[in-house]
Image (cartoon, rainbow, N blue to C red):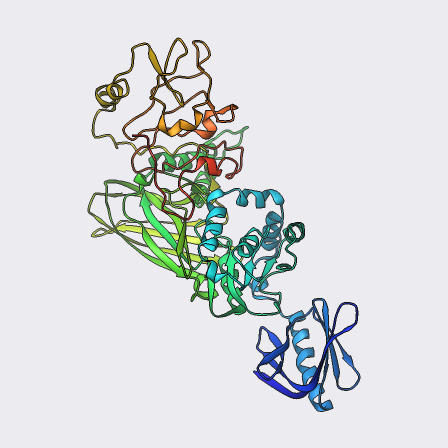
Length: 598
């Protein structure tokens, strides 16, 4: 509902109380009010002289019988109405809306448990957690690449960064040409973001706003909304709802970065994982634990362990069918669309085995005017800090190649900023149904930093015979008997000479290393060929000449179909610690390719 007031006079003062401008001709004041917002705009014909939003913290006061004074940012606006009647009407609107804001809880407050919100914002207020996300090279670089690939969408545009954190995405938006960026952050990290903006001399372009997007006010509409709102299984933390809520500030035709999200769901087999979770409850099988019988709680313990989604990574060949995709278009979706998500499941088995549960990963797309860039958490792509998620069934379901599996997935949002997950699968033509209900708020973080195991039964020929008949002969073809293979150094004879022209092409940057003599070689082995990478168990030498643990930087052999871009990480470190540009062959935002030495 809009209210119009004609004959208004406007004066504007700067922070030193000096008159910056004064309109001597009468203007029109418009108040656009809804249940959630109140927007004031003063116009001179088609020109907007001033505009601002009314909120509970807006500084304003009455001046005389027909005047109102507002302080907006670093300026003060004096509005003089033509009549006392107009002033009274305007005053009632402003007064009632400000009081309503003070008493009515925000949408975020209504849907979120207070203790959960407190813990959530405390977690993201730590610099270490921001570092963990920023050091996820795939995540951070793909966001930057998506913005830089679509400069026309950002050039001279106003941008809103939702849940800005360290404001790193805001910096990327400015790099892409944004005229103004509003970085909204509800946790205490907002203070550090402000410090970064000031230190980078961008205070004139990036404005940090401390508060929840559901509760703060912006002085203007925006052309683009950017955010990193994805959680485990895409929807965890319910940040996507906040991202969609922010569209109230988006101009018609504005863009959302990311623009859409795909949740992939596939049945998987993993006997070791199933038994690992099942055996955890054996502790409660004891009948004399310090003289106490615990066995009555074993069934409850099993249910509790199976209610935990497993956060780790796996070999894609453990999936027994092509994934089902559930898409959310962030440009058109509403918050309520995410309160209860139902996904029908329909698979044709591509292998025979026991289905132990459902595997989940997600992709998001940045759809720009010039280019679409994808960020993927698929098990076939480089690992990110989201990993993948697997939800176990209470009982495995046996399926044969070509048989049809049907079922359902239901995600029900809860006040703990997460979801209750209900899964069900059955084999067509039978009455056998397997199901489970899981708590996405309480996952089990299983990732150990090692290469995912290849599923058993993948060899169709004798690996031993293949090695001796093919790989060994190919590697040693034309190499003197006294030569040995050293990772990064090609063939080396024991007198310390390196054989010319036999440098490993994958490690040509190590060509300046010193000759190697007997007794000084920490590890030797054959350089793999025909699709396999060599494995070094000792030290790998970098171009700088420094030694570092090969277990941190070198990959094991890469089986066909597996994620060849996983990096072995120590479980004591954060995901970003070793994922650096030097360790990643493909560029983020482009099609990923698994490079192998031929």
